[in-house]
Length: 102
Image 1 (cartoon, one colour):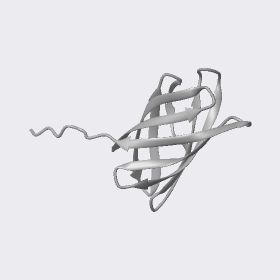
Image 2 (spheres, rainbow, N blue to C red):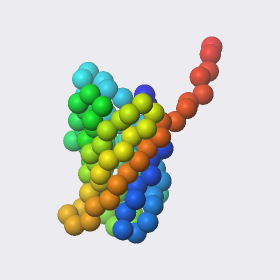
Image 3 (cartoon, rainbow, N blue to C red):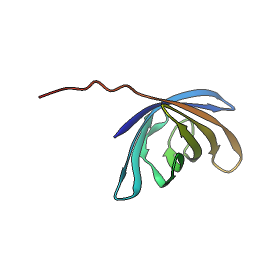
């Protein structure tokens, strides 16, 4: 599982969220959690380092965000569409998860 801190830049300002995903059976699956809500990645696709997914939020208004971006090592960046009209950018930094032994 990869965990990322994501910053979404919209016409209303910046929003921070967490994105957790993995490739399972050749499919990209995961979940995004933030102030706008919590939900699964939908319509998720991965092609090399290129990713695309959508996620529904409830705040500031119910809508579907559509992301398209590219990973480069521990960073990711791309575009995001907010519903039908507005668009913005996103950046993400991979989280350094603590490794625990047993």
